[in-house]
Image 1 (cartoon, rainbow, N blue to C red):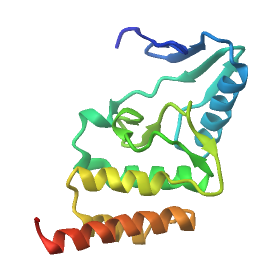
Image 2 (cartoon, helix red, strand yellow; image 1 turned 180 degrees about the horizontal axis):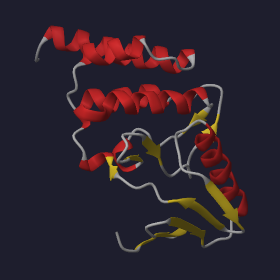
Image 3 (spheres, helix red, strand yellow; image 1 turned 135 degrees about the vertical axis):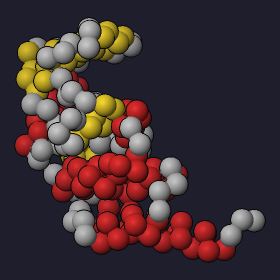
Image 4 (cartoon, one colour; image 1 turned 90 degrees about the vertical axis):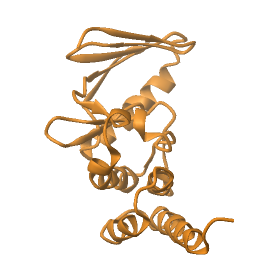
Length: 179
């Protein structure tokens, strides 16, 4: 893996084999500090890599592995569901977990690391699990298996119920058949 540089109007992100540097152009220290807090909390819950903040630069260890987009989802969805539930238990609403294929890295040892907490926030009612379940259903994963996995998962009540409701609606729609 070489050095990857990504630029947008807000940030420059440099990914090296060891460390990821994220620099805010606008020096919005409140935003970068907030992303640091969320990444740190996710790290404490085993869902991210350890972060470090130096002025407008957020540093974190590079998560080595494959992004979810380049993996067969059928092989890792159950483990990813657990990581997403852990984020919700931590009170972190990732916001971009609706598109997890670009925000989750499956490491060589099988653990999953969540990336990019820039738009996230802390809340008593996170929606990570329900967003992730909808994404799984859209990928054609078996709704009944997802429902069984959810039954064994602990997450905040509203998020868990929202995920179960999405599965139930999907099952009802599939019973009715095509229009």
